[in-house]
Image (cartoon, rainbow, N blue to C red):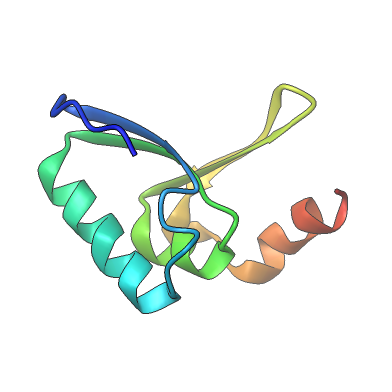
Length: 83
């Protein structure tokens, strides 16, 4: 992991090796210490619980961009089945 102390953190599955509880704590700490997090998270429950907004990309295009509070796992499931 690389960390340079800047206000924006970009991470690709930054907590994938942790269980959901530990991952949630780490993501919460990252959110406290950065103005903005841009993350690739494939754990839907963790993403819904720890983020303000979900953006789904397919073929380089945004196919969903919504506040996390307006989504649930059922709404996101089709995007994971398509792979």
